[in-house]
Figure (spheres, rainbow, N blue to C red):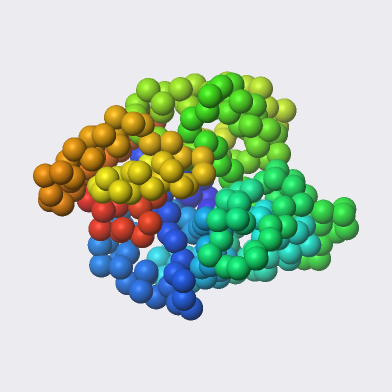
Amino acid sequence: MFKQFCENLTGDAPFISVEINPPHGASVSHIIDDIKRHRLDEKVSAFSVTDNALARLKMSAVLSAIKLQSAFGKPVMATMSMRDRNKLSLQSELLGANDFDIRLILALTGDPAKLSDQPEVKGVLERDSTLLLSIIYRLNNGTDYSGQPLDPAPRPIYPFAVSDATAKNMKHLLKRMVKKLDYGARGIFTQPVFDAENARELITLFEEAKTLSIRESARDARLILGQFPIVRARTATFIDDKVPGIHVPKAIIDEMNLAAMDGADKEHEVGFALSKRIFDEMIALHGNVHLMTHNRFELCSEIIG
């Protein structure tokens, strides 16, 4: 399964993954049913599962990934946030996930705890996501973080990282990409991209980062461009205002607001056409795209086509 995943990611054919948000509840069964209903599992290479995004309580990402991977027979990437775990907890969860064959890990620092819907939540944050990447590097060499040998050693873990899509100084993104590749990331997922020019800039930065990294694994690393299809004006405004690291261009917000003035059908029509065009451009330009739709799997299926 994971060999095929790597071949798909590094091959010439399009690689499409879809983000899944676990429920604020105790079962992902309805999410599995919805994905099957829209036959989305037949159209994508992999799924990823978020880890208490925006610091809001959801079902465990790792446990959700176990059930999803079993249901679809496709690799599922579990997100792990530094916000909620110290290095002891991180290692313990990675070892347990490994035994259930959850071996794709997306390392995040995590959204600030102050955004949480749970009272008086405090972040752990021993370090940023590079701590998790360094832990995985050691586990892949058969030792824990302190250097003690593991018996048995885990099967190979495939670490991934994230990057913003925009910055006031894009060279800052380059430095962060290099750092994450140096710590062993096999690929980097970007925050949502909303135009081809931004996509080209990110691709150029990533290719430069690969040449600057000290890590041999960086040579085969891949960039996966994120997309958040927008079909509602209020969604564009919300993610631009409230979601850290995401910037929606003012032109798109204005276009969606104008469409909304003519009713919900027009709003959806304009938003879908815009989102479909962005997706098609990124697939043609780069081939590796990660869709984030907050579990709107019918929209994912329509965008992919």
